[in-house]
Length: 103
Picture 1 (tube, rainbow, N blue to C red):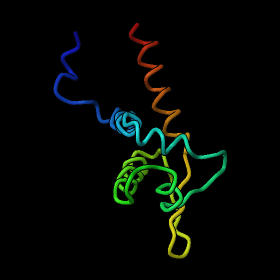
Picture 2 (picture 1 turned 60 degrees about the horizontal axis):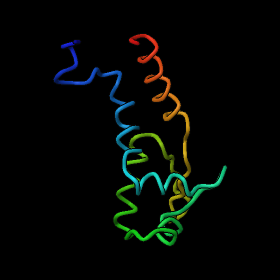
Picture 3 (picture 1 turned 90 degrees about the vertical axis):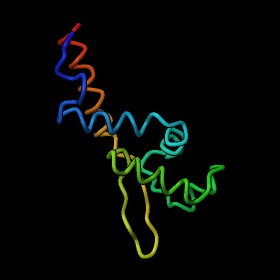
Picture 4 (picture 1 turned 30 degrees about the vertical axis):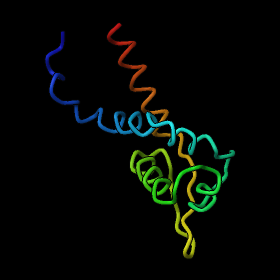
């Protein structure tokens, strides 16, 4: 057993953990899956498509954005969101590398 990681994750694993934590919630999964290819959605559009309150949607969007899974751009008074697959791919690659090197 590796005792190195019993108490803390390695610093390099933090972004990987953040992605998986963000994707671990069913509401955030549904929000992410509602985007069509190259589509950008506003908070209002996402709220209208879910059973969640605006506050709950804003929270989930913040978690997804902080994990890098969603990107955002403010246009006037509105913020548009869209998925960024790169951090998810990097997280999956990190897990695949771990499995390949350790098993």
